[in-house]
Amino acid sequence: MSTPASPFTDPALVSGPLYASAGRLARRTGALHRARVSGRHAGQVIADLAAEAVPQPGASALVADIGCGRGTTTRMLTQRLPAAAVVGVDISPAMLASARHRLPAESRAALARADFHHLPLADASCDVVVAAFCLYHSPAPGRVISEITRCLRRGGTAILVTKSADSYRELDHLMAASGLDPHALSRPSLYQAAHSGNLPALVSTRLRVKRVIHHAHRFTFANLAHAAEYLATSPKYALPAEVAADPAGLAAVLREHLPDHPVTAASTVTYLVVTRHADDAATSARHRKRYHYAAVRERAEQNYLWLASLGGPMRLPRLLAVEGQHLVFEHVSGRHAQPGDLVGLASHLGAAHASAHITELHLAGLSEPFRTRSGHQIPGFLGARLAAVARELGSGSVPGPAFTAGQAALLLRDACDGPAAFYKDANPRNFLITPAGPVSVDFDELTLAPFGYDLAKLVVTLAMTRGPLPARQITSAIDAYNTAASRHRPTGALTWGRLMSFAEIHHILTARFLGRAGYRHSWDTLRPGRPG
Picture 1 (cartoon, rainbow, N blue to C red):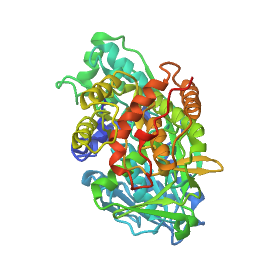
Picture 2: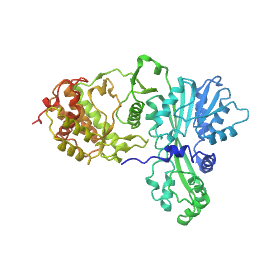
Picture 3: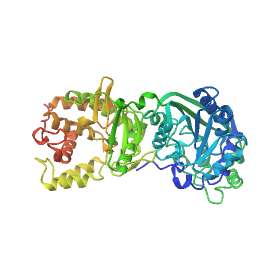
Picture 4: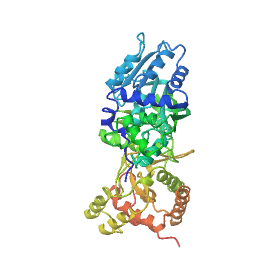
């Protein structure tokens, strides 16, 4: 099971019919502006925030408007900061042509066509970067934020603007009630990739969040015809072909099923003011991890961004930059996990797993890959595990396995009947213990997993690294895990037997690393007996 992708993150739609001409966006914006009864114009708010960010009157400042569209905000920025160099960037030639036409003849603003994943701006060149109502068009908005970070000078400001995921929800009810799109209420939000709820977490991995501003907007469409002007521009709904782009025809069909009266709707517009601080450049405060393959580096980056977007109890180092084959993180001072940390880490994992389940993984089925709201695909629990277990047991190199290949496969398949958490290779090296609590590091591996599976990995690898763990300590860890998880998900407690079964799977998969990576002891010599 997976979260359906939003049409707003479909590259074919974004580079094709959605913005192939300026007309659709003009009709959409026009219908909304006529319906708005409260909420300040976003362009005015952005211009005010930009003016606060640059020295008056903005001489020598470089201001970039990413995803500039028809140039409304670009024009306001040039008017508010007449001495600044303003550049608008968009991937759509039609949008740029409209922006050029709408800019004053005397404007010094430049326009550039580019994909916002690869901005045509020099490193540390911009004083202000604006990205308004565009980040949700990326299936990986963290990559765009990385580009914005790269372009910002030290101390520069980014103004990022998005909408709440439930924006215009009233119109979903209207479409469902009319019968034109019975599934309107279950369709993904157009803004799900980067919305008011998850954008602060996405941004905070790279930039310092100074302000988060939420403005409530209220709309009243005069009648169904007015609402249809907006609805006909939305890619969200599955409309009959004959009315999909015909506001008058759509209004006529709506009137056949619904009373013709004013239609109200609401949206929250969220502004993030974020900065790039000078200490982000300090070599002593950076940790660089090199990847031999771009696909592996990108996978690790997306794993990190998904975990960061959950906004739960996990503490992660800030991702400062993506530089070629490197991920560059802030340096975190701490030590790797030791046996005495087991109970605290169990509580940490229980809270993290339950928070992820409540936030998003309640939609996942363990036996198959899961596509997140942002479009990131997390492999299913079975995936390569069945083959890996069979391969390791077939090699004869696993000392004292507790399961045959058939028994292990049955255990793995049975585990898929439960609720989904995640596995992030919880070995001692992947935690840094700090005075403020544990910090999770290394994001190369991420899959779906049953509750408790990652804790079992920590138990096995702590023992392989440090020697036998007392059974009572493991019991205390199980209790701590269940207590933390129950604050979010009160059923299905982890048991000793289930944890030990998962531990045997980890023994099969980890035995080949014995003698490497700090693993000095074999699990088959360390198995604890069930406490009395």
